[in-house]
Length: 359
Image (cartoon, rainbow, N blue to C red; front, side):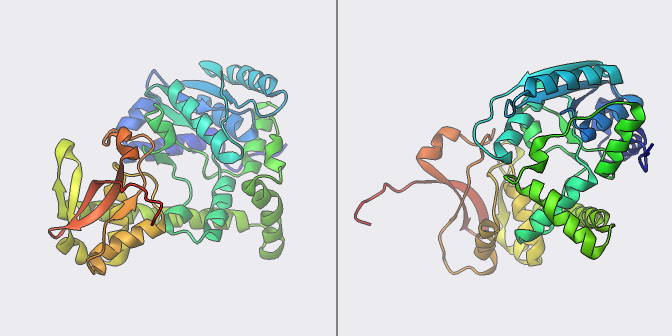
């Protein structure tokens, strides 16, 4: 019988110890009587997570999201719920969702929305592994991404779609495990796991990375390539976290606080004293409560207002999908912009110009 290199329970206990140091409130919540939500699919990774969380002493409430994308999905979901109860989960619930659109993105959105609603203020554990981290690293590398994207999956976060949907936080205790480890864990505890056909589909980029690219890399570069990629992501994650700390200090040093304690503007003079890499990271943190996802083009254009000022106009940034700080009804009449004014960088709303056919 194959055995995991480290048991899932031991990995979760180690993760809980790290969580206590990083976020004591989240740790207290995780080990508290309300317990945690575990996202369960019936696959090896999430079954190993469910088993490990129970054995680590957590009160586990398994939530199985049936995306209704495959024939027999209701049967798979019901079986996963049954297995969760057999493994010692305090409860197991199947939630059926409707996925709007094709591809991995819409399914992921529907899944996290469902998990967040069911969490109702509790933490959510999901079963990402080192294998997922390595795959994500390669995809991000192919897109010319920076440190944040290459840093891969964070073990703990309070900013995530599942949190927006109602969870307190999201945790990923199995990032050090491989799929071989989770499959061995399932064998060890005596549960059969479901193989998702989508994991082998040619229609999904990550599936092709997993099934086609990684085997070739292992053949050419050696069998440890997956672990090495995951380690690179982890090292970059540590760097990114340190840089985030510095960026937040920069914001504190040049911030003008507006209504509700939000940073309404930043001092151009103070920003100009910082290296470009730290300025750009500071913009991302500053705009996070106000704006939607920012691209490199947005960040470069914003930085030009500070470092290459020639009297240019404001930089339009995306409205957030769901923000408590902006009136979303104004999207049709106004643009969200970052502009330079009176030696300050400001976030503002700008009236949209009416469209003219003669232009």
